Image 1 (cartoon, helix red, strand yellow):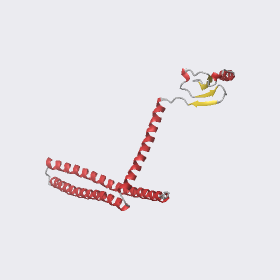
Image 2 (image 1 turned 60 degrees about the vertical axis):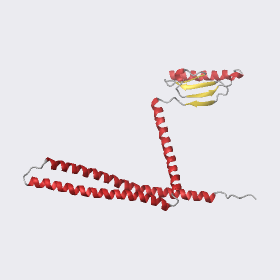
Image 3 (image 1 turned 180 degrees about the horizontal axis):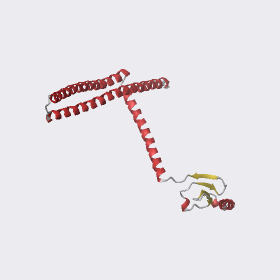
Image 4 (image 1 turned 90 degrees about the vertical axis):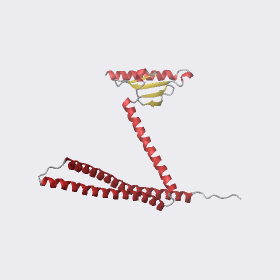
Length: 228
């Protein structure tokens, strides 16, 4: 009941303000009225905005015409401002990444006259990676043979009832660690090799698309005529 009464009073006050504004002097033509909702959920209108309502959502009404002339959203909380800033930064990062990709594509087209040149350049990179993989495979095989030999020595001593020297045990641990390290290197090289195939396919597709676009631009460019 109280809410209805206060709302009705606010509406009456607004009507009175609008009525007074309509008969005001010409210099009051640009005066505004503000309507907002207070912390209790009551709608309030007035010709001045109190400090406690500065952060509230509000509508602005022309005192001359009674028509709404604008709206102001409520002020964001610190958390909302932080989220909005993070979203803006992420959007800018995506734009920057796309611009960088476009620059790389243009540089690629300018660097390689033909698709064969592009494939040849990738072929050189692939050849280097393949050579490294081959060397790593050989290294893994040699380490396995060496470790198997050390383990065989330790096993023979144990079967003969003899103690395994600490030096031999240390060599086994060291050889095992070296083998694990070389296997990790090999796995990374093989992963890079697979990624390089995908990179080549993507680069060729982008190269072809840019070349086709350039050819289309040339074909649709207006012909130039020399004046006589």
